[in-house]
Image 1 (cartoon, rainbow, N blue to C red):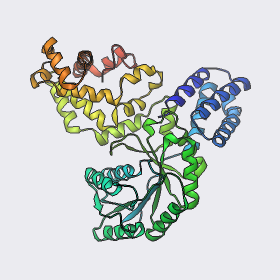
Image 2: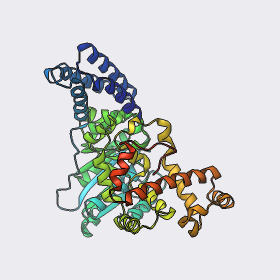
Image 3: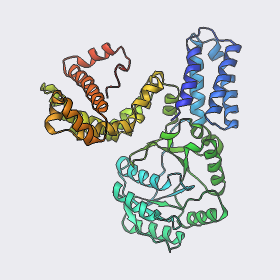
Image 4: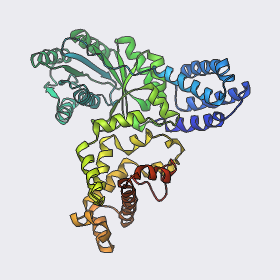
Length: 455
């Protein structure tokens, strides 16, 4: 997310960052570049205007012009104002009520609403330790109820059964009543989406809202629709008392216009963002961390939090002990590392949070996508146990067999072995005394882009 915006803003701010003196002219030039970057990212025009006015006012003030490092001070102003546009800090779900807390989900068709219900149920179970029931009041879309049932099983949430011949309002009321009987902490009601906002849809969802009086009414919106996402959310908010937004498909949105427009236009906070298709791919929306990513400073805090939540600590300890005992890092261990990255939202999500990634060429980033990760795992799965433990025996005929078994080319197998060799070397250095410090010095603080990325 924000790839194009991050690139444009990064290069613009880099020019001014190191300047010892700032004049009205170079502030003007910088602001023109920023304005163009925001408009190209599909940020709504009123939001761009207000943002530029505020940055200009502060940039030409005493704090920046008289600063010892005016370039850095201007970058901080841009950072602060971007955070302000998106809402200062994360606003969490309000679950402070006698259980069950009722969450009503609304949104247009195709925005990823039903998947977001499952993601939210999983997040509540894993992060907040809540018992969750989900129910579908979508009686119009074929297989909507069945889809939610399948997802509920996947995330281990209780599922309230409903039928397409039932009244959506009655389904919602019955689900809340059942959640009370089962002493559930939270009940999430999925509602029907439409291709556009229409009177029937609004009447129905207003009736559901009145019948169950939810503590949270969340609007699910596709970030890839840009500023249209903000306008749709506003139209919905005018009809229904929304409490927050879930921004979906942010992993496929290179512009980021919705994230920068939605708070300003609706006055409602973005509470979560969907960062992938899997049910674990839901993140709290922290404006200050998102801005840090946009400006190329990474988001180490979120990366650490994700590692604590999603990494298999037992597997990590096992690997550490194995390396300490001098046993080599093999392809089974490499496969485990790939799976751990998948659990953390995939390599794209991880790279986005690492500082300095904006300086890495786009072509290099494209080499490391989640499809490639799946390919690497398929290649390892096609090997025998002996080959995974002793990669040095993988020669011509073995390579042919592995490539055929994994549906890949021999050059893909060669590339994997090369990347594995780099990772093995890195692990060996890390297992030696003071190895981590030595390795970081050798890298010079840069990502080793040599012959491919060593994962």
